[in-house]
Length: 143
Image (cartoon, rainbow, N blue to C red; front, top):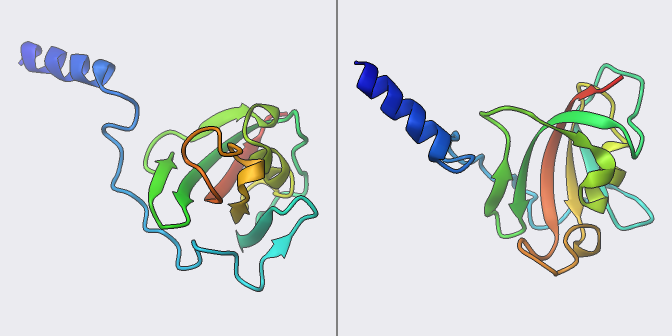
């Protein structure tokens, strides 16, 4: 029994992150393009609040935030997700520009969908290329 426990522990420590993750999240029906009721910022970021939050404070560009998220390409292919695992925590100024801008529009407890143009994502320099779509739940803003 101890051998099996050690084997399971060894596998968990050597598998890549996400290897034991939950099944992919289904792509939203509006993944190809923002719907007419989505708001758009001057930079080209489109967003829609899916679930209103209960907080009043918004993070700043240098705030550390904790989120759950799922990202899709516009063909519906999921390329990343924290859902079903641990939420992600990071400073907002260390992620793609679309996240830095978009998450600042949110309050704690809010869930929103973002359509991030390539210029605010990886600028065609790496995969995934093109417009990216993210569902983001802002769990916490570090104090």
